[in-house]
Image (cartoon, rainbow, N blue to C red; front, side, top):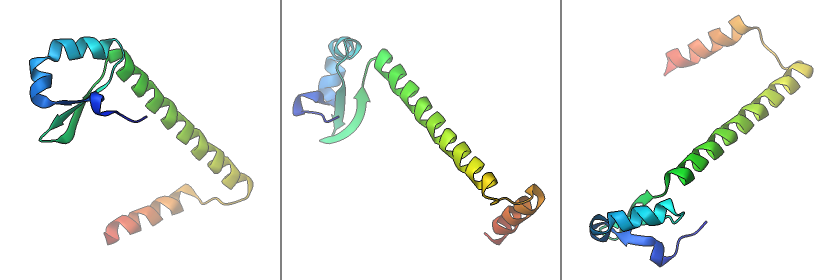
Length: 97
């Protein structure tokens, strides 16, 4: 999703118009607040933020499911190690750092 120039608000303008910008964000608008001409922070509504957090949790769950799928494939193909051996190998690697 891209942003247009009208979505970018200078910090001084945001400070002076925070109530209006907050109402717009609550209605679904997203604003990028700039500082010294560079993107600084975003102003979004709480419902949108909750939605973004839910998407991130779902993405993490999908990644975990991919890891489980790969692990099961490793077990089926015999690509396994004893836990004690694997832990010892990890400890050796960490000790070398």
